Length: 433
Image (cartoon, rainbow, N blue to C red):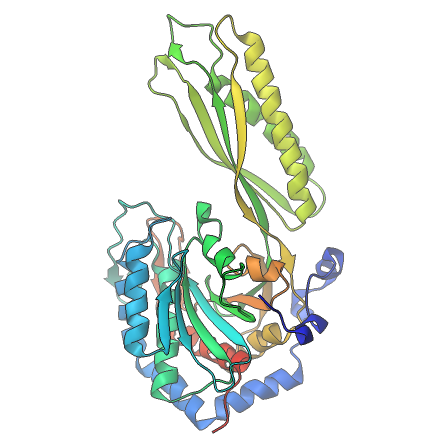
C-alpha cells in the first residue's frame, strides 16, 4: 500500500498535548474549502443529484428496512454481504466482489484514477444469530436492532451511488463503495484491517458512515485493548470435593484487585476507562467450576496508558490466582491465561487535512456546526496509519444503539445522504466535462 507524499505535509499523528489544548469550537474551516463546497452545490449535475436524493427518500428508507431485516451477527455477515453486493450491482458499478475477509467492494472508476477514495459502512451488528431483526414502523420512526447502526449507513451508500449514476456525475478519482465486516465487538475491525493490509486495494482516503447526527466528525481514534481472562482448575462436587481451588473465587478476587488498582490509575491523567463486560463458567450451583472466564475492555486517548492497564490487569490476575491457590486444601493448583482478543489503535489527524476540512465545509449547506470527535470506528485503522480518514454521521435522529430497542427516525434523513455525497465528491474530485 502506498500513500502519496503530498499528504504527509498535512497529517500524521499530532502531539496529544497539542490537540488536547485545541478547542473544537475554535477550529476554523478554511475559505478555500468553503468555496469548493459552494461551487459543488452550484454545479447543475450536483443540484440534480441532491434533488434526486430528496425525491427518492422513501426508497432509501425501504432499503434501510430491507438491509436491517437481513441478520448479520458477528462473524456471520455473509447473507447480508451477498444481498448488499447485489444491490450495488443492480444500481450500477464497474465491478463488485467480496474479498477474502468478507468485505463487499464495488468499484466506480474515475476519469483519472490516480487515487482511490473509499466510502464505507459496516455490515455487521452486535446482535446474536437468534435476534429478531424485524422492523416496526411507527410514523417516521423505524424500530429494530441494528436499524441505525449501521443499516442506515449501508442504505446511504446505495442512495449516493444511485444519485451519481442517474445524474451522470463523474469523479476524477476511483471510488470504492465498501460494506465492511467485523466493526463491532470482537470483530476487532477485522474487515478494515484487511483492507489496509498487504492484500488491500490501496486506499488513499477513507470516509466511513457510522454514528449519529450531522456535524459529528470522528477524526481521532479511541484506542482499546480487550482481553479474555480464563481461570481453570480440576472442578468437582461442592460438598464432596470441597477444598479444591475454585476458579470463580479466584476470578472474584482478581476483579476486586483489578478494579481497585485501575480505579486509582484512571483518576488522573489522560482519559482512560476499563470495563468487565461479560463473565461466565460453571456447570451447576452445586459444582466447583472447572473454568471461569471474563471479557475486559480498556480504552484510552493515550496509547501508553493501555499498556499500563495491561500491567495492572496482569498483576491483579496473578494476585487473585495466588490467593485462591493458597486457600486450597487439596487437588492441583489453578491456572490463569490472559488472551488479548481486541486491539484498536489510537491516533489523531490534523484538522488542517483536506479531507477533514472538506467534511467540515460540507456541513455549511445544512446549517450544521462541525464537532471533531474521538471514537472507536472503522476509521481507527487508517487514522493510526496516517491515512486521511473521517467517520461521519448518518443524519436523522436515533437512539438506543446496541439494544433491542434501537430506533431511527427519518427527521430530514435525506440530508445525511446529501452530506455524504458532497464529502465524497469534494474528496474524489468532480470531473470536468
